[in-house]
Length: 87
Image (cartoon, rainbow, N blue to C red):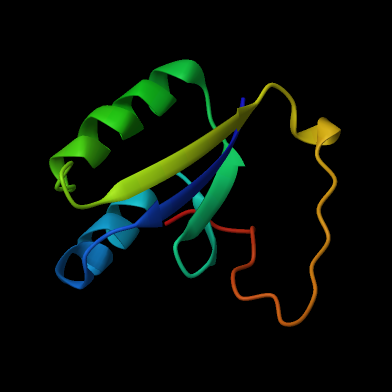
């Protein structure tokens, strides 16, 4: 499945969340990650991500799409994150 993940977390957690998500997805721009991921890895990502969040203050929005080829994206301006390497 293809995943687009957008987050809004308190400043003190941004770096930890960002570092964690880079293990699974490509950084696209501030607070936005995306990439192809299988169901088991997706579930592992969710379980670990919850450990980095304050569920009473932070929010994460995740879009799952069955196939990337069904997505059309348009970039306006500078591309901030290239999708060539997952750390």
